[in-house]
Length: 388
Image (cartoon, rainbow, N blue to C red; front, top):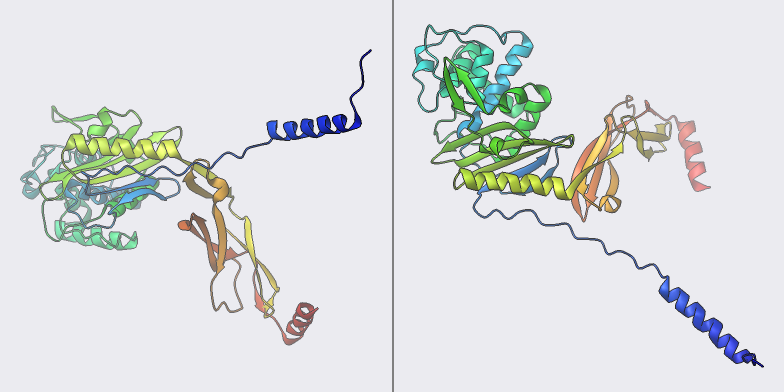
């Protein structure tokens, strides 16, 4: 005969079982992984890694340090040439008369000469693939009438684009103490160039170019190592060191990596590859808002209506470290001293995204309705409502 356990034994067994179950099946929270540090790249003087779509800087080192740009100068030469074609003052297939100054330009060359047929499209190929100083001079003279006039356009455009640490003093990048830029400004110019004139990639992705039966290999060494890289430009003088402005497209996402002051082509190429791999491996883009979405509300008793919705006028996507989107903080900072009346669409504040106390992105927000100054009756009722 089997004896039944005592009451105390039953209680002990139930308690022990519950304790075991709670211990065995407890959910242990997964610790949040830290954000991996950016590549150190001690041999590189300055660099920037930018997400093309969001414009956010993923990694940077001495990004505002003034540096000699060398042939990275030709990015602006190309930008203004495309602008002239867009404005209708140039045609891609228009033949260009080559001056003696262009023919005799020193440094790298695409080997144009007076009397030899060449059109704007060919000059752009020679500018961006061969890094031809002769092509730069020919385009500058065609667009602005003279190199000095073109330099004026370059500096005016730099100011308009917000390239505050850039100054041009020639069109080709030959050494000059008054010619300088920064890694950050180069990245910003590259982003605008691709956004406004995406056809530039059809040139910069080519590994060689042939003009007048002379074939030259692209100066961009990263093109030959990474199939996702399709541009943009390189530069080299004694003052600049080995500079590479590279852009890559992987799985529909484009990054821009700018390396300035490298020790040699191999070192700068390694740095670009390390930056691109870092950006693609550890960061991702998250859509946050669609254009027109409401992101906050202003409440003012002197406004009519008293509650004013605020929204964004563009799709908002943000670049964040993988696994950290939930840590993102969003705050709408309302502009001080707003006064009615306000038209619908007036900028009334800023949407600020922060991660670990660092500002990742700022977006202007606008009033989604028109606002009038509230009359005294409305203000009185608003105050009564607030008191209640």
